[in-house]
Length: 92
Image (cartoon, rainbow, N blue to C red; front, side, top):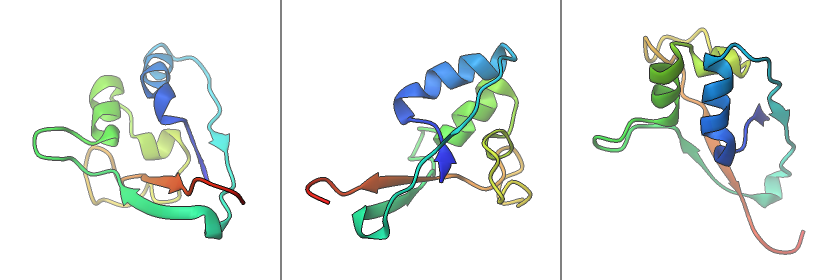
């Protein structure tokens, strides 16, 4: 899986707006460590992370992060919504 740390979201937005290069991190999560997977969806009046990214940069995050789902037309602004994965805590 490739992407960025959620704690670095605002920094990435600024980098993209300024035209600075960046490389998404590649991370491996063993399936036995996956606790849940969540879609990046809006919650009431709160926009999703992909919608916030698009609003601030004018760019599609799926294209920026190299998602193979970038050509889907689920959302005309953001394309397919990236997923968030939360690894289980505790011993391996």
